[in-house]
Figure 1 (cartoon, one colour):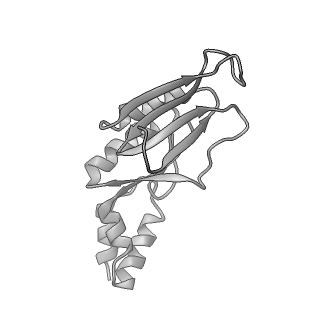
Figure 2: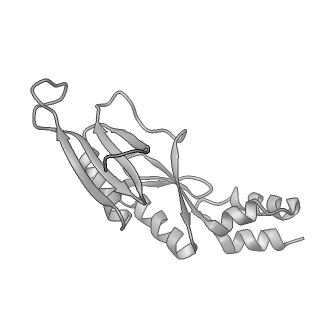
Length: 160
């Protein structure tokens, strides 16, 4: 996982290894990487996991066990572009199980507090329709949803 490009660092309060394992279970094309441990130089307990490298969907991540000072917020989220409703359903359910939570418009928080946008491609097409009326109706329908329902968004877009 070395080389050029970007690596997203996710700050955890002691559960970076569990988070990496969770993400690798959700995203089937993921790869586990190196694990770095704290040494006697600190600041963590010697031998405890400091960083965990992993890759999902071709994106490199490092989970850092940095402590309780910082937490995730909705100001940063990861959008999962899904080919269809079945793929969106998979990610929506996987990311909200075991303590995750639904939000609005296809957004969810996983059990670690990280925000995700689970978005079928057709939903983006509908709210970006070149016909402003169709886009507005699809958007209005979407704003009432937690999990996106593309069929309902399409019906709303097509209603005149």
